[in-house]
Length: 210
Ligand SMILES: N[C@@H](CCC(=O)N[C@@H](CS)C(=O)NCC(=O)O)C(=O)O
View (cartoon, rainbow, N blue to C red):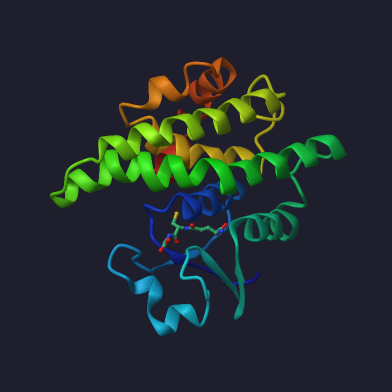
C-alpha cells in the first residue's frame, strides 16, 4: 500500500475535497500542514512541489501530484476502482463539466470574494467590503444555476451514488452556507438545496469540514 501524504491545510476547500474522498474510501493518509494564510505556500520549498503555491499537493511514495481533479481521479482509480466516478459517458462528462464550472466560475467569486470577505476578513480585524460581496453575487448565482441545470441525481448530484463532484461542491457549500449571501445565491436552485440537506449531514462532512 502506497504512503499518501497531503500538503495543505484543513480549512482549504480543495484539501477537503481530497480528504472527503480518502475518508469515504477509508484510506490512510497524513496531512502535512502548509499554511496559506502566512505565506508558507509561497516558500521556495513548497513552490518546488507546486509551482503555483496552491494546495493540495499529493505525495504518493515520492511522486507528486497537484490539481485536485487529477488527484481525486488518480485516487479513485487506484484505491476505489472508479467507484466515485459515474460509469455512463454522459455522466462522466457532466462530472467534469461541473468540476470545471466550480474551478473556473464558482470558486473565485464564492470563496475568493464572498466567503473571504464575509467570514475571514472580520476575524482578522478588517471590515467586509460590501461592494465586493454584492458584485460577486451575480457570478455565483450564474455558476450555481448552471450546476443546478446539470443535476441529474435524486440524492447526490449525479445519481443515487456519491461521486467526486459531490466532494467538490460540499466544501464550498460548507462555507457559503455560513454567509448572509447564501439565501440569495441559492434562491433559484431547489435541487441544490435538497442535495445540501442530504450532503451536509454525511458523517465524513462533519469530520472533515469543521
Ligand atoms: N487548481 C487548484 C486550485 C487549488 C486552490 O486554489 N487552493 C487554494 C486553497 S482552497 C489555495 O491554495 N490558495 C492559496 C493561494 O491562492 O495563494 C486545484 O485544483 O488544486
